[in-house]
Amino acid sequence: MSPATDPAAPAAPAELELRLGPIAHGGHTVARTAEGRVVFVRHGLPGERVRVRLTEAAPEARFWRGDVVDVLQADPHRRERHAWELADPLVTWARGRAPVGGAELGHAELPAQRQLKAAVVAEQLSRLAGLEHEVVVEAMPGEDPRGLGWRTRAHFAVDAAGRIGMHPHRSAEIVPVDRFPLVLPAIDGLRLAELDLRGAERVDVAAPADGGAPLVHLTLAPEADGGRLRRELGRLAAGRDVSVTARAAGAREPETWAGRPSVVEHAGPYRWEVSAEGFWQIHRCAPGLLHRAVPDAAAARPGEHALDLYAGAGLFTAALADAVGGDGTVVAVEGSPVTSADARRTFADRPQVRVERGSVEKVLGRLWPEAGPAPRGRRRPARGRGPARPDVVLLDPPRAGAGRTVVDQLVALAPRRVAYLACDPATLARDLGRFRRAGWRVRSVRAFDMYPNTHHVETLAVLEP
Image (cartoon, rainbow, N blue to C red; front, side, top):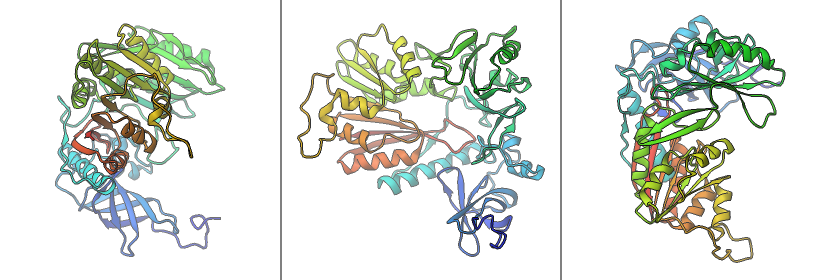
């Protein structure tokens, strides 16, 4: 029996009164008890005096976690009304329930949110990359004054009663939701909360920012009654321009129950068809902004060779292909079979674009074996007959970052410029530190507030050897 459940162990207090310290990566502020124990507190602002309900407080733990349940001295930038009631711990804990995740900074005004995110990015760059850099988090164009209605994608769990819901922070509990104010109105307008989705494990919804037909995708449990769910989703599609797909447990391919198996997305002059399980930038304005900003940062020239890593459906591949022209080449690497297939369809008529499916590390090692680590006791492989070495590299890895092996491979390939787009400042800073130790310099850093009312931030760094 652990001390947390041992009746003889001293019990942690259920609530504490604390003065909140600085913001930390992950959306927490850092506070200390009178005895010096660290408490990571969500839903607060630095300097506030608050009452905190402890959510993780094992006596032997190195630190505790908690939620603000009462504000005794408020920061002047605290909102009078939270962006979303279900994510407001002052409301939900008074009703005996934890707040859902997804709007953990919804208690702060948007300019204050951006200052907090800038402080986190700057701290991570300093601590992990040894880089002192003033960071300004840029607002997205045309942002809603309260940071609402920006998500073109939403992901819901399904509870035992068949209701869509979301999880509280670090919890498996499912809290039913009937509206989600961060999503586009077209997603809330589907009224998924009125459906009986028993047998579905997860619901993913995509709605194009330009008003195109949304798509609802179900991931089915092994025991699901697919016929019943198909009839239930038929109610959703009746009289609406909406597509429905579903993947049965163990199935290799999803079925299309209504409409088409993809959504149509646009950025600049281009059109993409993105499958239900494919990746696309989530903020309604992100594709348009990033389609210009990221390839501009890579600065590919006519006739050059570009490498687009973690390419997704090819949002940046298109602009790179334009930049290098018919005399240049673009190699786009994507690990997801679904999203890679989307990219192949999109670029089937662009002969200078080559789409490679597989992990970035393995594809780089296969195309340019001379850039990989030499086997112990042997020389590095000689240069093969693969594509030309890249002049510029663009990478947009998942939250885990690129990692040591990929960074070392890129250093060995020696492009003249790397543009690195990241959704996690900690893994970005870790990778930038490895580039810097290899002799590279960070030319610029930009940050974008692509996830208002959450702690997430998108950061674009440009590196040169």
